[in-house]
Image 1 (cartoon, one colour):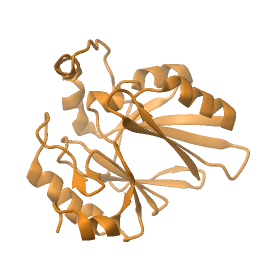
Image 2 (image 1 turned 45 degrees about the horizontal axis):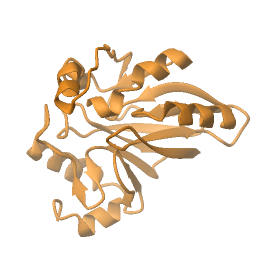
Image 3 (image 1 turned 135 degrees about the vertical axis):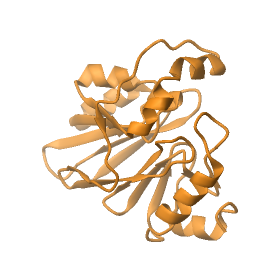
Image 4 (image 1 turned 90 degrees about the vertical axis):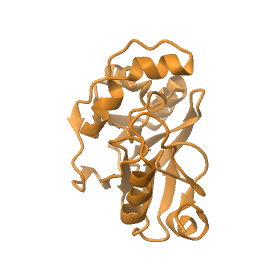
Length: 209
């Protein structure tokens, strides 16, 4: 497995391009496309990736703004938590709050089922529902080594809970009950900012000690 991290858009969303690089059939997927579409397209072309789907950790506008672009260009589906429909219905207001217009409708094509793996070649994706930043926030544990945590868990901090659908109690419970039980060596790849590990967050994250 190989992946690229592409900070994208004005909010520096970490968009991830993940794919199987161990055989000629390089099937892959994209997590939270927030911009930098031309750069991502170049990587897809250069690596000869067969893009299969979009995963959204959650559906705040900065994480889904390019969903429809990639869906239409590559004929792929959007996969996310059903509870994020509440957030998607509010995209226009989110955009206005941030100072720009957004009139598209984004539709989830397939709903995630918690703990039901998505398999793509030798890539195994385990959805872990981690509400708190938003009602349907989901973290993805890939091959038991990489945790794409969206805006739930960051290096030495946690996601905001003052946005639409947020809950401080829920996010703390989600992290402690579902993420900190993972192996200390699991690499945490958040929706913004630097990587960390589960072990580091157990030791140094003031919200979780």
